[in-house]
Length: 81
Image 1 (cartoon, rainbow, N blue to C red):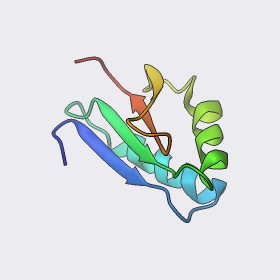
Image 2: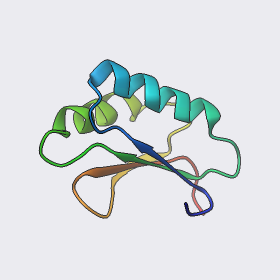
Image 3: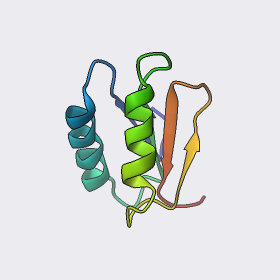
């Protein structure tokens, strides 16, 4: 794991389970964490990807949402480096 990155694997979760996991990760994110990497998958993960973009765009801890290094990952930027 890279310092400052927290990774949450959402494979196999439905929308409710994914939201619970992301909310928990956001609560645990302290000052050393600047990015949450959410792995939702590419083909079957589009519902989770859409949930992330809808629910967390206006979250007080999230500065911005960006695509990850591949289409199956979305990153929540909590603070800039």
